[in-house]
Length: 426
RNA sequence: GGGGAGAUAGCCAAGUGGCCAACGGCAACAGACUGUAAAUCUGUCCUCUUCGGAGUUCGAAGGUUCGAAUCCUUCUCUCCCCA
Image 1 (cartoon, rainbow, N blue to C red):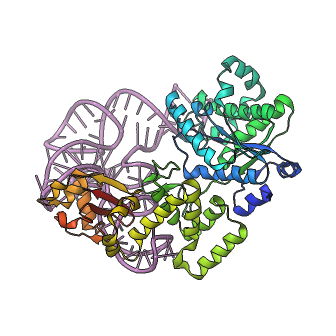
Image 2 (image 1 turned 135 degrees about the vertical axis):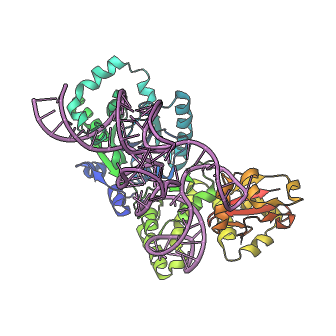
Image 3 (image 1 turned 90 degrees about the horizontal axis):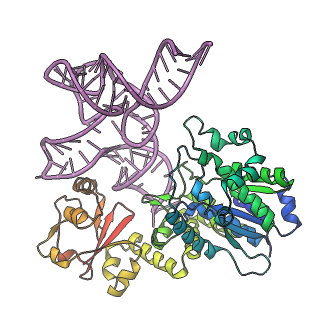
């Protein structure tokens, strides 16, 4: 069954701004729309999930989504939301990032349905042959500097300076829209609210150059309830790439969402229906401690980004690490299960010999592993009650570890704080 | 071109000769409480440390002094006002 795209985005809280006439256009028939992705990293992060979901809803509403990877725009650097000039990425890095992101995108959209299959394009394909002179004649001529200067992304930078390169960015992205409009019948560009200016430039170009019509729609920037940035955990950005953020950590990220945030997230990042979500919320309200909301959210998104078995493994590890049984359940864990359960947990391999005469805990944490960057810091954390071995808190700074602290004669579970685990394998 | 203000740790921001590794706030990290939530309270928060200390900071470089973030000189950058 096809959904109404705009309605869908509205109730999910994913609609920030729409150009007039967009809804009418979407109601008339199948529309081709696109969203651009910036290849600044070799993986997409959870922040990009908003745009991926937007495309997915777009497709489910019967429209044709195009994901654009910015091989060309990435070479220039989008000044939107940046207070400083960005460093240019090398071409190799860019290509690598592009390939990685493309693979991730392919996972979420349906590229095989006949009528509105998704598509991926790279704007480098139409920019590589475009000479500078051609560009300033064919594109630059249609937009005034006055117009370009009025953009927030430019205005905010006038005091501190901005290179011509970044200044031109909006033209490059604007031309993408024009190109896709002209050659692929794209009528709509979508993106985060910070992209509004760039999107409108494209529309303006289409209008000035060909008198054509085009439309735009943006999604709100997601912030956490406490006003901090979304998409970061203590250990940094949360990535979709399992090598950069393990499925276990990914699952934990969502599970740790605050109640307030979880309500926002479940609408944006899952495909649950309105009724389903409201039911889950009721359940949560009745029994807050069960955290069904976070669990449903984390489950759905972990399975879609990774897999069912990754999800199960994450659950299993989470239950052992955070469950009631604590020390006992650890002891009971079978040898063969040990590694698979802790697959997503940071691991260190050491020689068992170092335990023969005992080793100071502090040395293990710093010299033998990189769990702590310095002895002073490790000591402070131990004194503060922030270190546990096999779920048992250690508060003695001079604590010695021996083979008696091994689980299954092989493993030692080191805990830094409440949520950071490392497994040392001997 | 003329006049004025300023540059302090991740950010904001005190400090204007020794008591300054530098008040305070935010962010971050940890502990308690709890529901792996929020709020609250507590601790840590330049680097290293055998926890006794040691080393390196206050835009940059020189200088004065027993002693400088604080005084002097030069330089760099930012902001404001006048033209």
